[in-house]
Amino acid sequence: MGQDLQTDGQLRLRPIDLARGHGLSTQAVRNYEEAGILPAAGRTPHGYRTYTPLHARALDAFLALVPGHGHRTATAVMRAVNRGEDDEAFRLVDESHAQLLDDRRTLQAVERALRDLASTEVSGPGAEPESGAGSGPGAGSGSAVVSGHGGTFIGPLAGKLGIRPATLRKWERAGLVRPRRDPLTGYRVYDEADVRDARLAHQLRRGGYLLEQIAPLIAQVRAAGGLEPLEAALSDWRGRLSARGRAMLTGAAELDAYLRERG
Image (cartoon, rainbow, N blue to C red; front, side, top):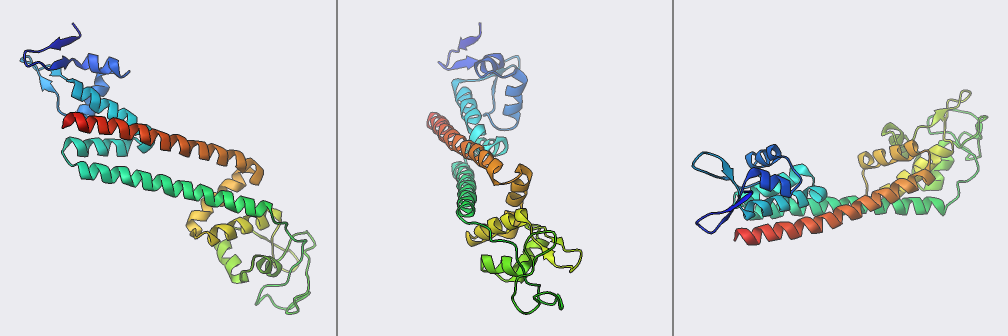
């Protein structure tokens, strides 16, 4: 018989009963107990584990928490609850929600930056040499200097963005832009992809993001082959954030049910 109603009136479940009810193996159930995800099991006179509906509720809560919070946080939450440290469990849940909000704000910042990029047109190629670059066509005069290979130099690009050339050099050191060098003059030359990356970096910096936070996003743009392919990635990102938020709601409901049953 899979379930046995004991004389104390408590329904007892074997490991196999708990496992089957949740699509798990009995070993997984034992592992969850040993990890503190489930309360300690009872034992029969012969030493066999016995579980109760409370254990089933705990397993419901854990499995519901994992999609929204991840295995590590879900485990930490359940351990805290089973130790009677509810406030610690709530803190862990709050941290996950804060991270989700931060991820959503990052997505929104990228989307705003892309919209701004789409609404502006890159000016034609032209340049002025960097400070300290020495003499050359247009040096110190502000006149346009065009690379023989196309593209724009640092002065006009900095002016277009409303930043100093030194800022572009700093972004280059951080990997946000990767201009080539003109073989004749040695000046930095920014092609269309570099200008795109500089504009995206500028928008994100205006949004308060640090260079180390921007670099991975620029890398995603490059890996996607430009902004248009990135739109699909952003749509997928948005969908995953929404799914995670919905999963957090489900996890919260199951965790609340477990806390209520524990009393």
